[in-house]
Amino acid sequence: MKDLEVLLILLSAVFSIIITIKWKKSTWKKKISFIACIAASLVIAYNAHEKNKKDDLIDRINSSFGEINDNTDVAVAKMEIGNGGTFFNLGTGVFSIPPNYKDLIKLFVRSNKLFMTAIIRDRKGDVIAAIYENEWTWYKKGYEYNNDENSFEIVTQGDRNVFFNVNLKKGIAQVTGFFYTADGYGLQFYHDDGKDYSVMFKITPTTLDTEIPQIIEKPIFKYPRERYMGIRASKN
Image (cartoon, rainbow, N blue to C red; front, top):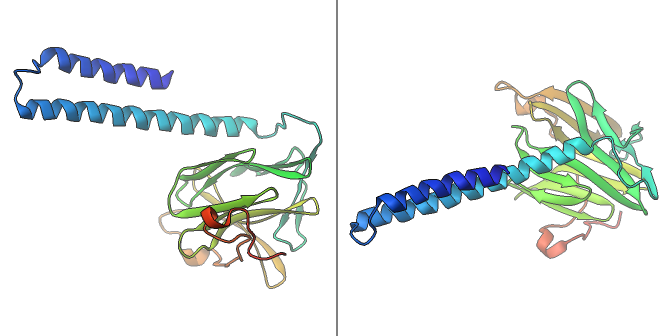
């Protein structure tokens, strides 16, 4: 409905221009202006359509947390920080730490396959990707991803440092990387020197990179995905 309203407004504006300009008698400058107006209207309509699709998907994901619609052959995955032995029992399948870290990710296993639902954001709170039960919608440049039936990973483009990954191993979802919220809270999971760590922080104009542990995790997959779709970096 929002898309239709925007499109009708834009078409009305274009129609008004058409009836007020005599095309054949118009100068070339007016004709160029008219064409530019139509092009701008189409761009605005397209951008509004894409934004509404994005908003609808995010609303769909947020409303789905805590619900597993098809309970046939479903098991809630236990979550672990990396492979270090620190576990979280997810209950409904949703990982949350209220009040600032609510509904970060939903994980469950169906027919021995890991399903993930999450909104992955960068440190500014902008959406990198929205994943609804393994269906990826990509929104931001500067990152790459790869996946197979039981693992998902996002890395930075170029240096390919791990930003986020989850790997199902023996029924346990091993998670490392960053969770960011829309209102500037960050959570990092990492495993270093035989120990598990979870670091919570608030992103502000004065937050320094040195305040966030710079741990380089080994990627699960090879990249780029176009060449190595679902191909792991090692057999482990």
